[in-house]
Amino acid sequence: MRIEKCWFCSSTIYTGHGIQFVRNDAKIFRFCRSKCHKNFKMKRNPRKVKWTKAYRRLHGKDMTQDSTFEFERKRNRPERYDRNLTENTLKAIKTIDKVRSRREAKHIERRKKGKKAQEMREAVKELEQSISLVKAPSVLKEDPSLTLPKIKVKVSQEQVENQPMEE
Image (cartoon, rainbow, N blue to C red; front, side, top):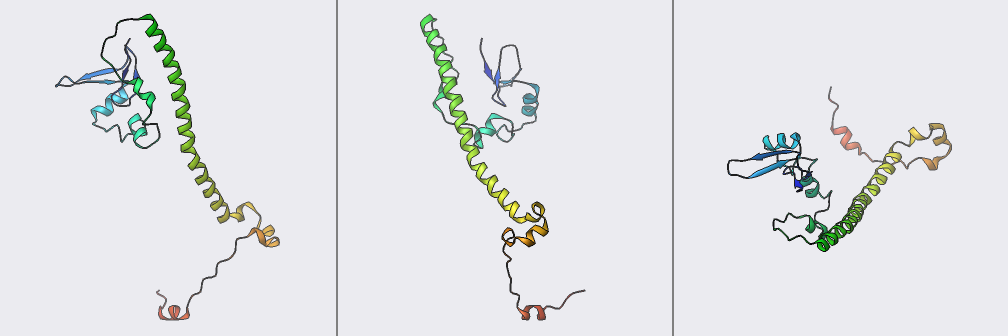
């Protein structure tokens, strides 16, 4: 059983599933579902469509360089069946899968780390700007430490006099 990759979104295609498109120059394109096939026919670039693997990798949302991707590459060289080799390969696949999932989790945590600090800064700024919505104005009058310091701006009289009001 051969598991193929979708040309557009890079998801897996199992045997008996998906759509296959053969161009005039005998190049084969495999698609996992009609959504990918239609986007291909509309000549959309997978790197610009947000839900594809290509977009996620290009914009740093998925891992791009990892040694575990080496095992996923397609090999067309036939191998002689060896029971021990097959058994070892299946064991290796399980360990590689665990390693990859751990690395992906670490990658996601690293991406979230900066986002949390940014959200905290934005929340503090918003709270400072609209403290009157959280605390009642009467409480703010009683305790001046809750209010923000007033900023005084000097306006020169010459500027005001030289510019007449327009009606």
